[in-house]
Image (cartoon, rainbow, N blue to C red; front, side, top):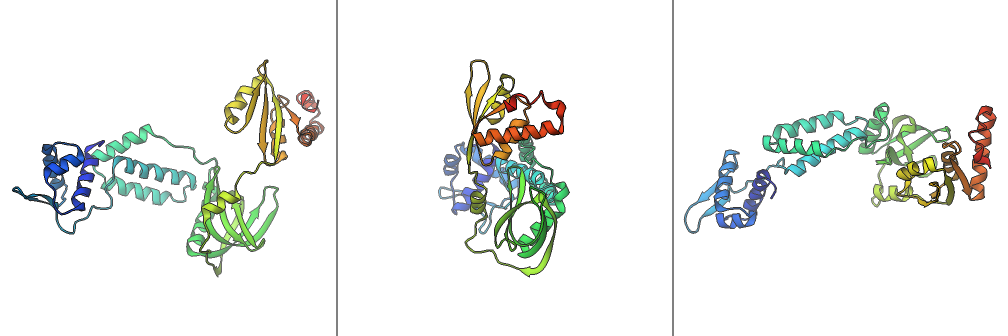
Length: 327
């Protein structure tokens, strides 16, 4: 086993599993010497663990009847998971749970032995997870708090929502759960305006308040299953794009795991990419200012050409930059 703290916890677990253990049996279980077992027993005694020792051929070690391992004794790995988990919750919640995170970490710092705290500190320095959230949710902290409160109390709520195309609607919803996906928080709820289940991006919610009505979540509802089904990526088009040599490598670095590249002798590449809508794909091509050229399908080419023309109409001096896009 990795360290003394882990062995001590395992030793207590073994002692809890049956009334009496001989030193030789414990030594075999923990793969240490009998002398080490006696040393560990002294450590447990110093920690206040009630060990009873019976000498003689039929003797051994046992725990005081009724004693159980305190709930806040962890291995170094378990404690590291708790510290990292608290940090990640603080990151993705927009600091909604900052007070709770601070309190949890303070309690861990207070109850964990110094040896274990040193191991956790070392693990945290060598295992760093940061920037999990693509968006800073601090401006939406109050909304997240209200959503969480209504979800826990099963209280219906009214909200004002601004969609992707900037259309605002007022709705009454039954909030079921919150989910964090692709760097954004989403509310899973039953929308009475649409009479169906919906997901709403939290940063697009303009206002929210509870209403004087309660609801019940269906017994067979699974938030995880709903999210997997509702947010499943379903490609409708395969677009083909030519990439100039000076951007081909950079694009590959960012998109190689979900697209197909065909390298050309001159260093350029042909990109085959599955997308759910052509609007996003056309904008992506145009963002490269002529270094990316739409090849297929024709509907995609026409959309890119129309977008380039709109840019030219608004900024005539940009003609040179987008000339190759419309060829």
